[in-house]
Image 1 (cartoon, one colour):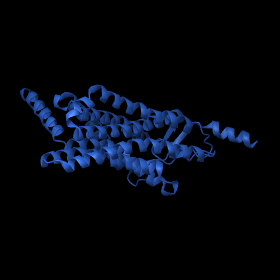
Image 2 (spheres, one colour):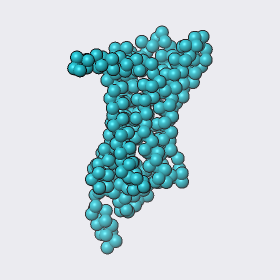
Image 3 (cartoon, helix red, strand yellow):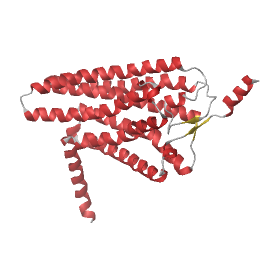
Image 4 (tube, one colour):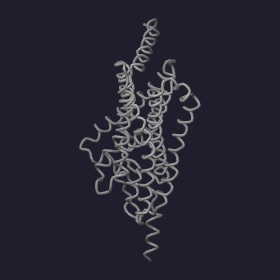
Length: 320
């Protein structure tokens, strides 16, 4: 009889309830407007950055190729979660079906994993540019850039293909309330009524590998870069190299810090409220900060932006 009841409870509902950001807020309407504005800023900022790089021939270099890939990932990343959050608040619903939950989980895992490896590729690019400038055109030719970029996407998708099917095939016979604003793996796993300790250990090891390889590449690259910058005779060269690398390091710290908290810290450090705040940071704020970091701290991008604005103003003059 108990088994029959369990099957009924398990198969009777296929939807999850997302107990998201707005349930924790005293001013949900204001929060909804803020998130919508941030979402538009992220889309417009990354779109402008991609267009600038595409239209300006001076920006057709490996570094900006990788920045284009990063902007594309950020646009997709924020689009995986935020539109659903905003629509649910406007429509007054908070449900997500199991297939939708699985798709959302797959895309955010794939995009997050891809960004890990892309940031490592960007660090390697800066290492070659600063430490081996004469060999840079050979070591970072178009074929190598395409290989590193596509490898980042492929390796990221491995994370999605590994974790999503296993997570979604666990039996969920407890409450269907996900204490999160999207289907993040740790939040979904808390609903399972089976023993997930082995899977959580395997997920931890997987995340360690996903982080360890890029972190090793990034830390090694920047160790050599700092040593090379220290030996530079030109103060202007040191300043330019440090400005370029510091922008990248800011992005790395923001993204990797949130990932380490979410997937590598023991559960005793986690609460639903903290998890949501950290997730807001790397799913909503990071995509809007990246184009600002790479544009405001980069003279080449600001020069290209001024050039584009001048062209637009010239084209608009006859219309007035």
